[in-house]
Length: 507
View 1 (cartoon, rainbow, N blue to C red):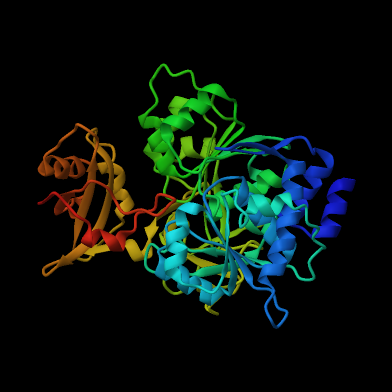
View 2: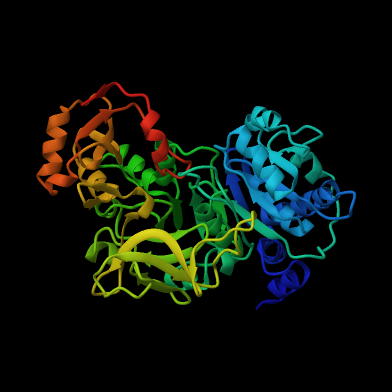
């Protein structure tokens, strides 16, 4: 450990607060963040975080002397990073709030997790006001007197905290209201040592983080970037055309995305585009199909990594480019420090090649939900809620979420298998498959389809397209054309909302 890192860890502990301070001591003039407003170096970021931390500690201290939590409701920009580092330095628990959170859920989270201060972008002012909480509200992205920029300019001093705070991440909420998962804010707890060994990160890399930083995936890569004194470029909103232009103009070492972003970039890329491919493209947060991975690598080169995990279990497996070529659709092998086991319905290890419940164990596991509940565990093994199997080489293949499985006429259908076939059709932009009630078969397979602009297709043609590749029980009985699918900010389909989705036709 170098002297700057040692001194920073003594002062701030092993987290992002120490990482930023160490980078400021060794590489003060190096650019830390590039966003829509410009750039900021590590020295400036460090000083701003220290001043904001002092304000946070003062504003979050209750009448009983205890510190409340800091809630961050922000898109990707420098002030998100500043607030994240500052909350840790203040000794306050940090609650990362989804930008899609409705006011009712925000009020519930504030009450449940003891949020004393909400740092919010101006665009979320109405949501915060409707939540009617008692929390102090600070603007993340304005320049007024009640803003992070104004507080940072004060140059306040913050002494080291007396407690090591927790990080609270909200689950995706695809099956209901989000839960709050607790964990420590350190590189090894969020990303895992094994991830650092399997993915060739380097000191001083240049990142583009397109994934939302409030989500576990985007956050984990932001923490790694700060820990390696790297430069992070980010934008408030993802736009495939804008990102493609940046890839033409700049050489990024690391691109952090969710699979839907890969699809969108491919859609706007011409065959003769002079794009500078990043050294590594890291994808997680949702299913990466074998087709999409192959299309991306054929166009941009074999630099794609698929990472599987969850908010609760952290990183579980990593598929490198060789894995994705050898076994399309795999999520890879477990890295060092992670135990991966497939258990059958009796809780016993399933034979290799047999499907079962995916369980993971690592030091990166979360510490439980803030409401006192926990994930299902078998000893140190934590259930992910997915069903999968290991191939002969030990690579994991995830069939899908157990909650999403459709049982029709006694046959099990995983939506991802049907969606992958539908998405290959040249007229289909994206699809989602769910089970709907059926008096004869219990459930029937229903497909919600978004068509590419200017394209059309007959529903029976889509059914025939699926029937050419899959068994008859997997062929959709219904095809519903829709303008868009309800999705989380990381591109996960909110399946329980599909039943009420507006549609043009039903077959």
